[in-house]
Length: 97
Image (cartoon, rainbow, N blue to C red; front, side, top):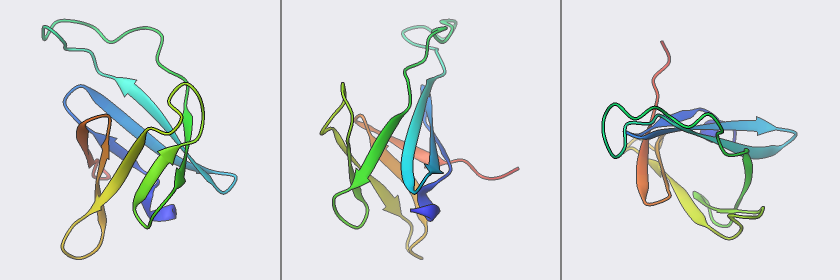
């Protein structure tokens, strides 16, 4: 679980995964830019949600309104988690600066 706790980024959103009290929570943040590049992100972002592993790298959301939605962490050829697949999108792990 600890290896999954980081921020993942895609064109329209970031997913911040945190380990809190032994549970993984995800905060999704829209970047805006859709349907036109000058569209600003919404002021009200969705609340964080908890995920539970159902297999080694696969998870399900355990809270409403997204309960039972599924996703997975994807690994590189060396076995390190590099991507998060959720909501029909692949989010790449943000590199530490």
